[in-house]
Image 1 (cartoon, rainbow, N blue to C red):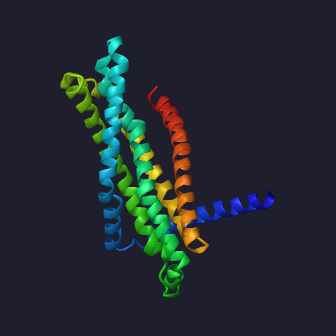
Image 2: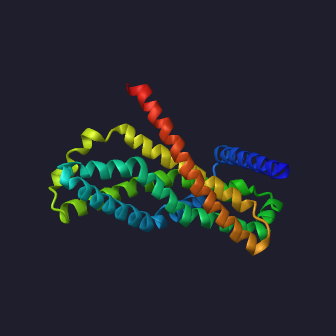
Length: 257
C-alpha cells in the first residue's frame, strides 16, 4: 500500500512538472508554425465530421424528448431554449471533449508511446532536440485553441438538429423555436461552456502526452498506455465538469446577485 501511494505521488509530481515544462517551452520559444499548423489540421479539421454527427444527433434527441415531455403541459415553446442551453452549458463541451479524447487523445498517446518504445524520443534528445518543444508543445497549443472552437461548432450543430426536429417533424413555428433564446441564454452561459471546453482540452492533451512519453513495455505497453489514457481522460473530464459547474454557479451568484 505504501509503495502504491509513493508511486502515485511520484506520478502526480512528474505530471505537474511536465505541465510546467510544457507551458514554459511553449512560451519561451514557440514551436514552428508548420508543426502547429499540422496539429490544427489533425485535431480540428479532421474532427469536424465526428463532432458534427455528435452535436446534430444530440440536439435532435433533446428536441424530440423536450417536445414530447412538454406537449401535454403547454410548454412546447421552451423547446428551443432547452436544446440551446443544454448544448451550450453542458452537453456541447462534454460530448466534444469525449469525441476529441477518443479520436485525438488516444492517437497522441499511441504515437508518443510508439516513439518512446522504439527509442525515437531518445534519438531526438541525443541530437539536442527538446521533445517537449518538438512533440508536445505543438499539440498543446493546437488542442488549447481547437477544443473551444469545436465546442462552438458542436453547439451550433446541436441547435440545428433541434430546429430540424421541432420545426420539420413536430410542426413548431421557427420563430417560436428561436425567439425565447435571447431572454434565457446569457453571456455567462457562453462563458461557462467555453471555459469548460478550454479546461477539458488542457486535460486531454496533458494526460495523453504524459501517458505517451512514459510508455514502457513495447507494443503491449503502447496499448495499455492508450487505454489508460482514454479512461483517465474521461474520468478527469467528468470530475472537472462537476467542480467547474459548482464553481461557475457560485461565482455567478456572487457577481450577479
